[in-house]
Image (cartoon, rainbow, N blue to C red):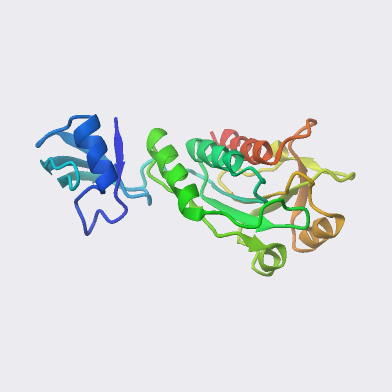
Length: 233
């Protein structure tokens, strides 16, 4: 099943120019062929092509499924982006394939990157959503300062921070997050500073470990996402 993305499907039964070109030129679809369209908020639409134009492919909706593939839990990843943007894009792609609801980028003391091109990240996420047959596009937030993040900590049943400092930490896999919402903090390659860790703990974040290996930032984000997914199977 090939999925096409149209976030405004309730108002516009037409594919974007890029999606139209793929449908007509690459897949060689024609009028009266059926396609499946997702809206990014859980809607899966079975449609029929009514006008096979390679720039404005129009369709009519035949039937609809709402909450298609909805997860029983909510996962919010808050991460300091790496200097090499390709590594973060790779992480976003894989997290979307696994299942993720929200991604926030933060600027910490040892951060290597101070800006993120959100449209580029969203394009990666859309491609991964379609490839993995999902109907939910995660919310992707602009990068914010550490102070700004702490002033507006997102709601969740569990708030955890994965850091490398000495001390008692619970394995993430032992957090009872089944059918719960969880917000996971992942720091930069240089880790969080001791002050940042203390500030996070004062806001209710619990220290966790992702295992014995020392992981790259993007690997840590992916491991956290996959752990939450496995615990909710």
